[in-house]
Image (cartoon, rainbow, N blue to C red; front, side, top):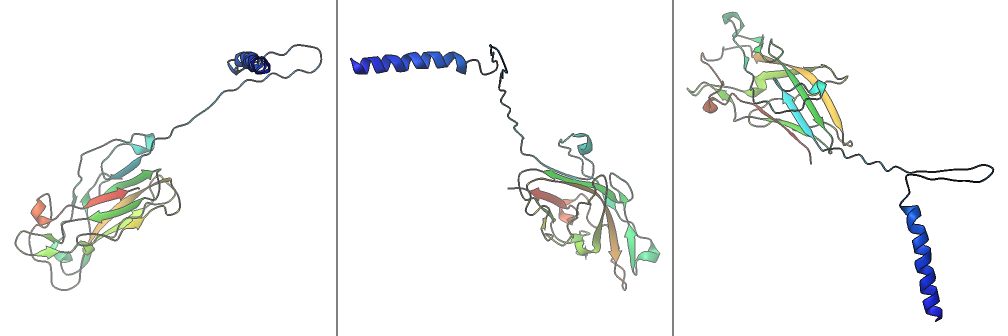
Length: 211
């Protein structure tokens, strides 16, 4: 009989508590003197993980448009005869014109690395080559306070840049200006190097990675 009384008591107590649990968003107090009423709201924020890279023509990331864009810009160098024995040649083309490209990286899931790859030295299809190390990339500020650094181009693969060591969130952009430097001395062999033909190795692929 004692056990039965205890059990009935626990059931009654639980029944009294249930209405209170069901009314967490409202409370009423009565009586004389100071009164305090409380109510609760639970908040939760879920942030999606994202990694965005733009080099050249792309979506309007500064207004929050992070979207795919398949456009591949062309940077063209056409040195004059007088520049062939040694000069820094400015390019044409690029989404900002004058051989200048918009570059941007945004990510929020850990350390981000950036690397540039190609198929090897540019060639003219006749056995003559121009090394990627002759294409320089100068980085200048765009809309963010710090300019996004540019990988130093090299035949096949550039050195890998770590953009945000020790932090999980990153956002920087820049204006990347490309220059073709012709070394002093004998001129490069006449021909058209690189371009869209895969065999001429004129394409650089930039890759941002985040774990």
